[in-house]
Length: 317
Image (cartoon, rainbow, N blue to C red; front, side, top):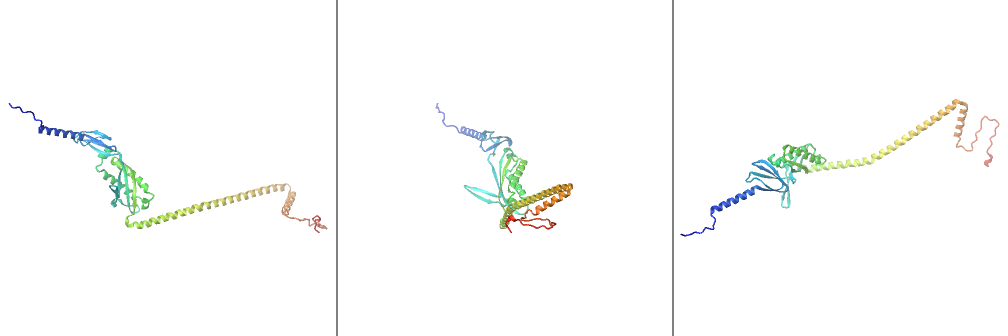
């Protein structure tokens, strides 16, 4: 009887089984483990229905597609550009104008090209994944509608000047209100207007109008400076003259009142002793008339045989 030793080789069926088992294990491990980076959160679905939202780190799920994860970046601020594109290639960037987005009609029936960007952050990953089918198109459509509405309510000079910041603030508020109504799960942080220019065909004429506006504002400012220099001076002079007139009026009134009081007192004395008062008044008048006279001799013209003599002490003949 001949004895055959056992073969050291593994049969082919066994290799197939081992291979299949290895593939199953690798598939099981590969489809049940996922990693969420620090800038994202993962929305997990089971059989297509929302299950949970997981934070950054290593996580496990049901394998073989039973559970699926959708990574949503919630940390970084995302940007949408309108009217232009910045195409990055390595370290270079190419600027491409998109006039179909930027051309708008202003409230005073002028055509203007407005370029802007919006910055937003995803705040609700579940809403971002489930509530809107095409998030990017929705964001762009709402933003274009908002800016077109705000530009259409204003004149071209206001859009390029004083109302620029007002448009940005109103655009941010309008978009956030609209996106909350859509339950998109984002928060618009800022709307920033970039270049605002008239179409190329009327650029030269617009520059002339803009120069005229600047000249007008310059002349207005110069006139305002002259006004501020002269008007306070004239007001001060007018106030000084008014004060002088008021002082003069007060002085005249006080003098008149003093004269009235003096007359009343004299009249009262005259009523008591008319002759004496009349004589005293006469003497006072004579004293006042001749107060500044020198070497004057007063004599009674009714005197007879009166020889006027000069003052011999003066040394004159």
